Every structure is written in C-alpha cells, then in structure tokens.
Length: 138
Image 1: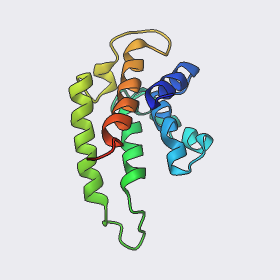
Image 2: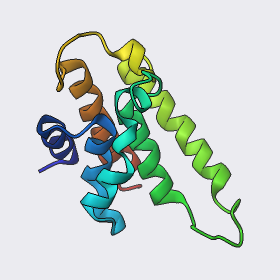
Image 3: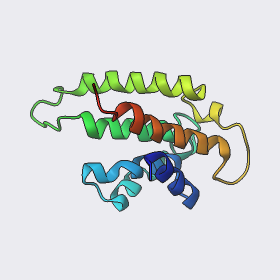
C-alpha cells in the first residue's frame, strides 16, 4: 500500500488531515501511531478549526521536521535553517498542486468529512512526501 493510500484510508476512518498524513509516516520515525495521532489532533480544519494552514500541509511540515532535524539540544540551530528551507520548498509545491496553503481557500465544499476537497489535499500531501521528498536521490 502506498503512503497516499494509507493516508486516504486513515482520513476515511475519521482522522483529521494532519493526522492522516503524519500517521502514514510515523513508523519510519519510531513513533507509535497513537502518539502521532495525539500530537496532531489539534491540527485539522486549518489548525483547530481556524481554517488557516491546511492540516495536510501541517502533516508535511511535521514529517519534514522529524526527518531533517539533528535533534541536537546543545546546538539547536544546527539544522534549523535547512529545515526552514525545506518547509518553503514543500509549501511552494503544495500551493502549486492545490492552489493555496490555507484551509479557508481549499475548503470548496460543505458537509461532513471526509470531503473530496480535503481528501485531495491529504492524498497530494502523502504522495508528495513519498514520491518527491523521500524519493531516492540519483
């Protein structure tokens, strides 16, 4: 199963956008799905219902941080600015694919989740992480 399919399955189950994307990748970082689920609970609906940054985008940001940070508490700036650059690149790619970074712009339908417009963002986020960010470099 691809990460895109896994994230879509989780979203269909009722996970929020951020949970769906982040939980699809938690195993790679030795984080239990339950812990990842709990950490990302407030990041759906554009950060807790604020309709700000899309939860799927927040999932991308979280996974980039986990994968790129040196986790060096003595040198907290060691990888910080590289991580910021990766955030900017991811945000540009997400915006190019989806039209915006903001839930208020992306939420083009009304009704109960999972809405197709949100499912599209979840799938695109997971696919980008799997196929672009984590793609083998040649």
